[in-house]
Image 1: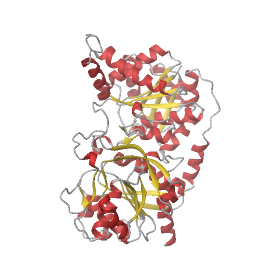
Image 2: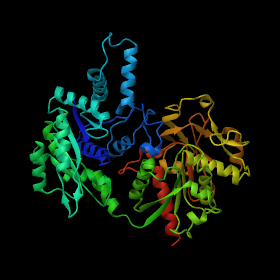
Image 3: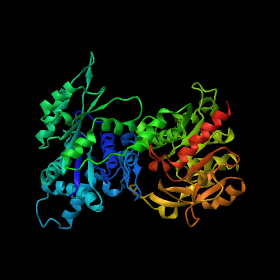
Image 4: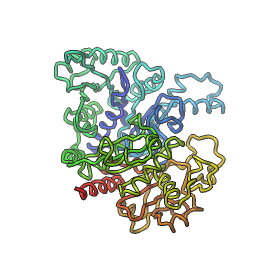
Length: 544
């Protein structure tokens, strides 16, 4: 029988529930178990695809083209189990399915209710993940929101039912709460007590308690919490503040024996743990020398989570290349308000400027000319540049305007009447009015040309990466671009679409239409991010 672990949160949001669930998944994989991760999101949106990055952070895309919550990015970085549409469950999906069944007469005239019909739909989706692969041992289900949120109640009720039906050794509740510190450094356990009480009122007795606290809880505090929450002392753990990286959290939990307690409660033999990749990664992290400053020129700079996977992939590359990566967040609109990019990006800038430029994905016209200016600055000054999705399109617009002399070169996303639409819609995208899940989404194949930076990074011609875009390099200008010197270095297998462009006579200027950040891990950096940071590091060292 499959094992289920339900991870819930209390007191307040943003305590690191997703990281805690992912870390537990990493520990169980280290014990040789096959783990699958599931996120239950209480919002009524069917998926995260149409949400503003300011509202909910980045949209993480799976191989099958599902636009999901950013927590699935954490699952992918910490664990190795496949992720697809089945791993992201939203209230919108659940109600859409139940209402459709009701309209089709699937409930045989019965009154459709939250219990049992909504909760049955949630349970069937969770159990489907367990059944999808016969090799699955454990399904870890993170329930979004906090206990007490009205939106989360159906998911918690579904969890209660699965725990009751499966038995305690086959389904566990892991609850994450806050232990705040008040004046004088005193830790207060009362919020945690109330949070567990709220769970008990819903019919769920947590089996494991993870306390988010500024410091590791001592034995006396853990005993007190256990006493007031009807738990064993050895089932109370601390997720405490660290000054290293979130990727050390699996090792912190391992030192506290979290995985051993979970396995014991599930009646699973405690196998030998293999966490060598995690220890090796932390050794590399601690041995980093020097620093490179990477300017992220984007549209959504006020919210860190808007480019979460990009920032994490840069961090992973820094670990692999042995250098610290400092993120310099630059709102592209700032570059539109100045006569020269040098005052913001160059060595005479107030903060010392940047060593490399990365332009990530995005939608809409705001700040585009600032991105084009950043690309032109990097190209002219031989500064390593990495363009992702929109960042590649910006390279093409810059080349059209500043090399070919087409002042009106643009994307039809920003200027439908331009005489030189170097970026445009695919024909099958022309009449689309509904924007949810209608783009070029998910994993597809790219074929790299020999003797190129992209080929050097991947070490193979056939590359599989994920896409999320609607606009493409316009093939009617392909001949002009090539003859003027722009290198088109990767294509779709049929050669119909341009997937990568590179600048000639430049240390490292490359843009790709896909999103390599989605597959980067702390123990295995994305090849393109790795080579980008290496190019920045080498250029900086050569200038000393």
